[in-house]
Image (cartoon, rainbow, N blue to C red):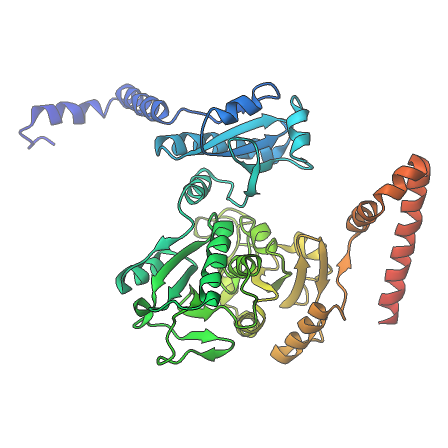
Length: 452
């Protein structure tokens, strides 16, 4: 510092040695940053809800919360920060929040049955689609960007196709044939564009000319076989993930709903590592989630800078886990249209897997969960190998093997299916009916297990 000829620089450097000066500079920087992104999510009430939404043309992300809810408290600062960031980018997406304990009329309208409940609304208050974004500010803003972007991207060159594939976890591309002829091809594209609109908030979807896929360094599969070079990709919808590529199966209907379901089912890696941030997204894709519960342990406190209880990533390299994951990956290639696949550290998730009948003393093992229906099924320990697992999952798909339900789920399903009967029978009779059915269900379940 003494050698510098810039006296201002010397004075600034000396000033930074003064703790009071450092604190003053930090305060100025913090204040400046806060001024730049100080906007919070808009507070909506029963009185101003409709008028506020209609005052801004665009998409509204609304947090319907309760002040006492722990998850709501954790989400609140992320929601406010996302609101500020979205505003700074001039996105036509607006973040708002409603206190359901004070404005129950709004929350009843949107059938809130848990907190926080997040809704994607239009300016006239209609639900556009289910909320499928993350819970951090960055993830929320990324979700807002996707919501406000076109459903598909037009790619014109092979270079653009390669760049699109490289930047996304999963890339969906419809390769258009050079000569689009016939009503069938035209209808397929129309249905594809509808499906793209349904999935554009969570998937990266593009359209490209057929020739742009000629020199891609991928082995592209269709119905379990490699697509030959002389066949070409014209008219095919392809998903690119993890250096692998797969065409839409020829057995799947070419309707918007079926295409949307296929895109939703393939937007994650073929075999995803399950954690708290993606568990529900992996499971809520209208197909059961098959989880490989692997051997592992919690990382000791202080090791490699990790806090106690944090996950030990080395569990993936345990020899028995490596072999098991290879088998499960093969299952995923074969059965991904009907099941989602993931894996987790059984020791880290011990409290979770034990609830579903998995003992961490006997691992690795498969666990099947229907997240949406809250049904589950631990695969028996004597079912082993690719053939054994494939046959067992086939029986689950056909309904030959039934999934289990816990007590809470049985009651919820019974009440939902017999709501009219319960209301007609009165409160006391309704409770008695529930008790009788639950006891009968438990006894039947125990008898079945004993039989097996």
